[in-house]
Image (cartoon, rainbow, N blue to C red; front, top):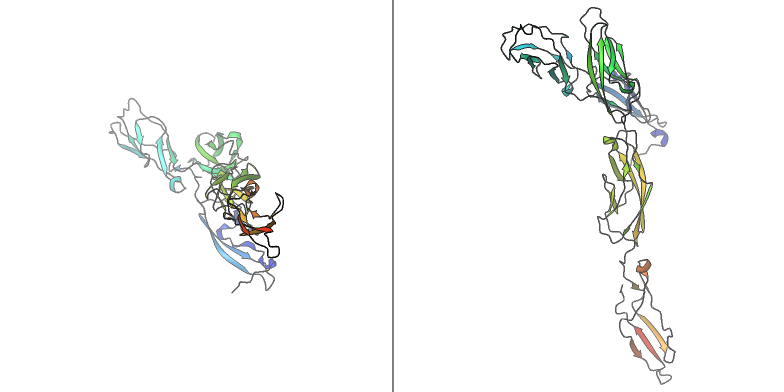
Length: 436
């Protein structure tokens, strides 16, 4: 049974989101391509998964439009966009001076709203003092004998750092995009915390504003991966009297802004028809000014030409079958180089392969044997007959010369009419007709 193909008017598909659910205002769909895009910032810590119902409608007229729906599940992957936060801003503890070494003094605790390595916290003490901290648990212990008469108080800072990779921001991110929200805690009543980027903001690419008690870092100017690949911003939170600082690491990732470019739009190469299968003919290459996967190039043959293949990584063209100049003297291959970025970008070039003739065909006489006759009294150099052979090769390989390889066999015939021998019949017996 054959399926009926829709007429053109019945095959114009339009897409729309029927049930956005929690994704309302977050996602939109291109009605013609079906590509789903974000139209607002997503935050895994707020909503980690979205479910959309998408409809495809064929806009048919006869007997009417038909449609299908599909459930789209979107999972928000975690970015290291949250810093660890201590449960207390300041810790105060008393300890006897005769406390033995390795005595536990205090456990500090910080949590991170991210997940996995992005939420795993590592503790360290920022100054030199007679105490150690367990990097994983946050327990601080005495490392040397204490002496109150020598030092009565110790003031020091403890850093909590997660194990996540720095925040990644694509270089084609739109100006105004939200990057990160920082929150500083202040136990003072009615305190107002303000935020400021105090260092590391090369070329003023970023801005910070105070919103709902937090500091929202946004992109102020376009990024350029070739100029800066990492920013280490120092952000200061202040209540007007006291302040604290934190470092924000932002890695800029390369956007697929360049397409591969071949060195030439057309190549012409030649190969002899007698080369064995697997012979390398030419290696063509394209370059891409991006980096990473955006610059990793894959080569493909656009048409299925069984005589050749191309290595997808190196661009080397080799033979897959024996070539025959007499069957086809040239081939034109369309080669596309595409990168592995999102979206992919590509370039196409054409390779003309000229097949060179080899002397791989023997001459062939047009007849298996020739018969001629001549009168006995003809002068020397009289033409008796013409033999002909052909050769499928071309050029010097197809130009023929003729020679006798054996003595000519003569047969005599007596004429009944004249009673004497008026002529000889000459039989050319091409004993070796296929010499080349």
